[in-house]
Length: 314
Ligand SMILES: Nc1ncnc2c1ncn2[C@@H]1O[C@H](COP(=O)(O)OP(=O)(O)OP(=O)(O)O)[C@@H](O)[C@H]1O
Ligand SMILES: [Mg+2]
Image 1: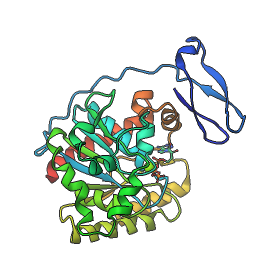
Image 2 (image 1 turned 90 degrees about the horizontal axis):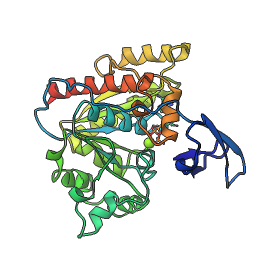
Image 3 (image 1 turned 180 degrees about the horizontal axis):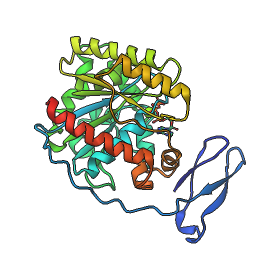
Image 4 (image 1 turned 90 degrees about the vertical axis):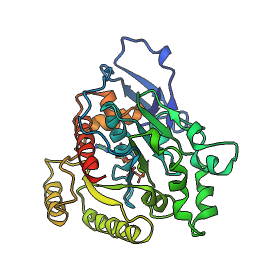
């Protein structure tokens, strides 16, 4: 089990087998800052069973979704992970691609020291199809990231046809999946441009806070540019994340977003939810950590909305 120091955010590995099964919490001292954190164990980690699949069948395999916003910390990685598992629970075959040097998605799923897209592009002995990780969640696969990814950007950014590197590789495996979801960094450069060029749909997660409407406009303008230059089919939708119904400012900005983007805003809204943060500490998608969590249920609703709209848009 990975736990996080409350004071310095250091991630510590704890051997679960040494914990008394009857305890509800335990203390752990951080080797870096010496702070003692109290870790609360979830009351019960529930078994998640696949729910009945939605009837609409995808017309084509490999519908590709990029999660993007150049603003940091808006819930891109959390959306990628939780939407991915929700689609898999609806019995879709899903590939998650961690296309961010930070490797937050890879770490959130409990993986380290894995082969990344960089390694596949550079080592002639490797191919994408055989380097995907089959996760412990049925139907959910991962293409991880690692620190080598930064070299990919250094080597290719700005070179001829650099925008199509991911798209070319994905053409070899698209048929194996119903949905491919790409998590991107909080910037518009090599990785985000490749991901936008490869995708059918861009989801732009945004919080309802000051300047967020401006940030969404900027991303939508970039997507318009991509549509003109490298990917004429890409569509864009906006997803409100970490919504706080009790805060007047959240409600005001939500109304503004609704007025600005009536066609683009998802009906589903992801609420701010402490359970999601706890789940992340336990390296789990929230619906697996707590089947009744409000954010987990809304990510399931988002998956249904996406299955419905992606079938119509193909
Ligand atoms: N619905 C939610 N409720 C509460 N906390 C959330 C929610 N969604 C995300 N968070 C928390 O917000 C923080 C940022 O989320 P996340 O890493 O998904 O954002 P990001 O856009 O991928 O960030 P970056 O731009 O750095 O890649 C994390 O600590 C995460 O646990
Ligand atoms: Mg992220």
